[in-house]
Image 1 (tube, rainbow, N blue to C red):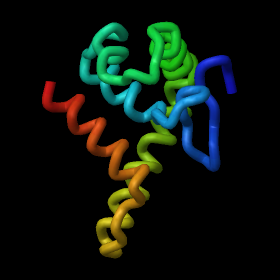
Image 2: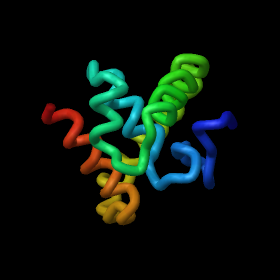
Image 3: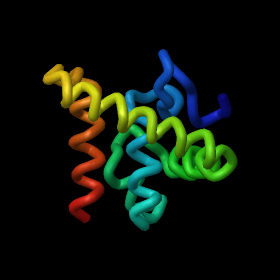
Length: 101
């Protein structure tokens, strides 16, 4: 992908972490600064955050489509009554914390 973002099984992550690109992008879209995003994720360095934001901006249409597809997957799970995986639940909780700021 690039030096800060990798694709693992169809999900974008910050390289070498369990933090999804989704979390960074949602926080960025909501107006959080890279520095405040970094504070929310102990596993990230500031260059990771800037790299993830740069990746998003360079690939905005594709990432937006990816995020929309992921949201639809979540809604489909809800419609079917399928509980989310622990990983998905953690990402959603993280995104929710970003929203409450």
